[in-house]
Amino acid sequence: MTLLKREEWQGFVRDVDWTYSYVDDEAVFPEWHSGTGKVPREAWLDWEEDYKVSYPDYVTTQRDKEQSAYAVKAALQRSTTFDHLDEGWKSSTKMHFGGVALVEYAAVLGELKMARFGLNAAWRNMAAFGQLDELRHAQITTFFGHEFIKKDPQYDWTQKTFHMDNWVPISLRNLFDGMMIAPNVVDLAIALPFTFETGFTNLQFVALSADALEAGDVNFANMISSIQTDEARHSQQGGPTMEILVEHDPVRAQWIIDKNFWGSARAFAALTGPAMDYYTPLEHRKQSYREFMEEWIVDQFVHTIEDYGLKKPWFWDEFMRGLDTWHHGLHMGLWFWRPTLWWRPKAAVSKDERDWLREKYPNWEQVYGDKWDVIIDNINANNVEATLPETLPWLCSMCNLPCCNAVPTRSGRWRVPSWQLDYDGKTHHFCTNACRQIWWKDRDNVNHETLIDRFLAGQIQPMDVGGILAHMGLTPEVMGDDPDYEAWTRDYVGRPAKGLALAAGAGEG
Image (cartoon, rainbow, N blue to C red; front, side, top):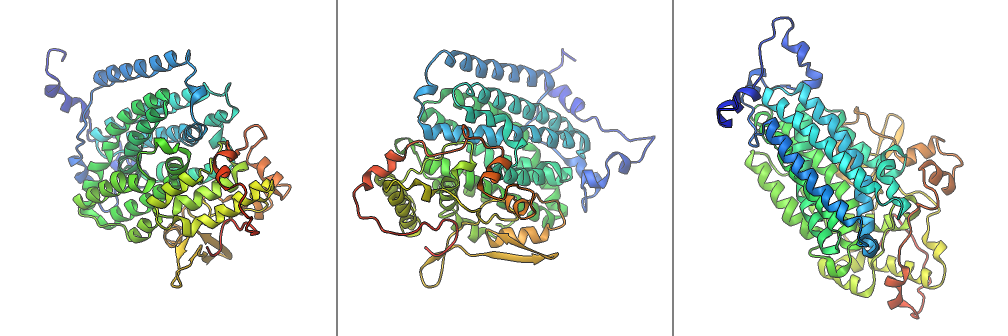
């Protein structure tokens, strides 16, 4: 075989399906794992990925990537680069390390499920490489993040995050368990490789790598780039799966796309939005979060699903309006509940930064400016206690994120609506109408209890802020706080105080 050209033998070695003589097909590929549904079993014979790779090529390529990534890391360990990074950028990396490292490991389990129950031998072959990719991503992310613990204990959450009952990982577990662990392999291939990896992470990693280089964090940029090249390959499992599913069951394909795009967009609004529009130093911002989403996510996503004959999701108008507000409200919530985080959220609302925000988001001042004015007045009056939480926010029963999405009313004022639904003797709260509708359709699936659910059930003791912080595993040395109040309040020192009480969360703007 070594004397043959690869194209002469690759098709044979990647197509190792055979007819079972000792057991029927249903026993090998049970419906609850394989999920063929309305698609005839023989239709999966046409599954064909674009990105073909052999094991020798895979090992050679991955070895080169590892050598490159770790060589850069080793060289930078002898430098003082980390010490000169902006605190806002460091917070972005802490969010990434803590929010991603063990998600990559969960993706190993998803890939292994497809490697076992995928309905085509080529698919199973590609998923086997995919699980090796994801295992590598978990290892490299965990290892790179662990290096900085001696410099900052908050980096310890690289490994700890998903073992904690902090409200942020609860939200992420709710999303990714539904995307990677619970579904059958057909739904999984549409949810993870197609919607999340192709639609979100591939493009986000490219942008994040560029931002890292701009911020001077060569080590992080190198790590992200190394990961992204793997994602670009194994994410190709989604396309051929989608092609077959759309042909036989387009309604199912549309639903899987819709609900997983929505969940991904909500998570990105909480993590990527604040990182781009607030934590990144003003001089390093290349584009706003909305501009990034419109250029790299929205256009690409719409063109992709239309190529498959699908429609824009039914919530599209709500999503597009949310690009102007979701992440701003979530940023304010993250900052206000900063003791519950493992990073240091920068408010980043100095006059220059507010000028930039108004330019990118014309309604920003009207909706959020007066709230930040009250916070600034409290800080300049040495009343920082007034900017710290005494209660819990509403948490959405679907995405587990705070219900803080402002919408305009007919009167022209902005308010945060309460989307509620009574079911099985309990009132559920939702941040958006789409979250409520998705939850209702998927209500029989396993959903994680929000922090509010746990609090009201008496699972958190004592039932106060101190008990909540202890429940979430937060100790004083890792609790988040703004790294530089002076940077964004100095322009407002000396002005008359407004005498307003801060009302975080909901209410009219």
